Amino acid sequence: MKQSLRIATIAGIRINLHFTFVLVVVLGAWPWLVFGASGALFGAGMSLAVFACIVLHELGHSLVAKAYGIPVTDITLTPIGGVAVLKDRAKTPTQELLIALAGPAVNVVLAAILTLVAREVDGLPQVMEASTTLMREPPRSEHIWVMLISSNVMLALFNMLPALPMDGGRVLRALLSYFLQPERATRVAAWVARVVAIGFLALWLVMPNASPMLPFIAMVVFFGAGAEVREAKLVRVLSLIRCGEVVTPYAPRFRLDTTFGEAVQTLMVSPLPVFAVERNGALVGVVRRQDVLEAARADGWGYVSSVLVREVPVVDPLETLDEVRSKMMRGSVRAAAVIRDGHFYGLITELELVQAMDVADRLRSTSTFESGTSPSRSRR
Image (cartoon, rainbow, N blue to C red; front, side):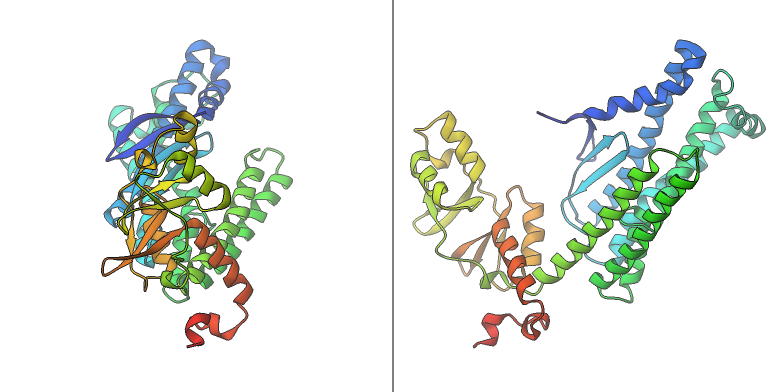
């Protein structure tokens, strides 16, 4: 079942609404119900307007990322905010710094523009006075400016808290990365994030009127920081291994005339998620495990060529697994073909990445691995 609905496409980026987004309208309307149907409509409309600002915030991140060549597939809106899906990570501290700053910068600009418009339309004294009567009297035009300006200011300030995986945490990590190794910078930023998370939780415990969202935010920050540390470790480990050292020429391969029945027999004995399809020893594409199974259920007499994916990232045997992973994330299929001088060595799939990480965990205490020299090379 689809969990989100596409509502627009901006600059090639899909804007989706998560099915739980209906809560935003309900929760926005609820406090204004005391003023009747018109009040509830006002509250719901303001919630949607604030989330429009969140879309612009995420577009700020996304457009800067795209300017650096990082694909962005979609932005999904949920009751707790927006999430932009980038298909790769920033490659330098400067890239991460500018991508992270772009979102809050959009909110600062919006707050400034809205303040200028409010001054011309209703006057700043009237808007300031309306801020003291918000939700104490029926809504009026000045309340629109109060809510939009304050929301953008709060979005900018909250997102700039130095807590991974929030924007401020990414800014902190980017700045630290100018002086520290990337993994070390991430660990320091994660430590700061966990302190902030504990602060959120303590604030919720000692303040009777604190937002009930604080403990949830604390958990997101605390565990999100841990996920960033694991990702940084993964990047370091994969950057030490060349794909030519893990690719296997013995993985099962299909022909264009391989039937679904024959392919399913192979799938029963092989855990690979993606399989190469060859013609006269040359790679013509790949098929995904799930595609083969679904097609076999629908048409047991067909051929794997009907679910062939021809566009496959190509890598050199000397490229690192981190570089391979980056290309896999950008592509439409989670696999990369290892090719040099026209010779196809085999595929690198997510399974090889997981296995490489497992082996690296077992070898991380050895000097050969930590120095960046693979065990296979050290024996020669």
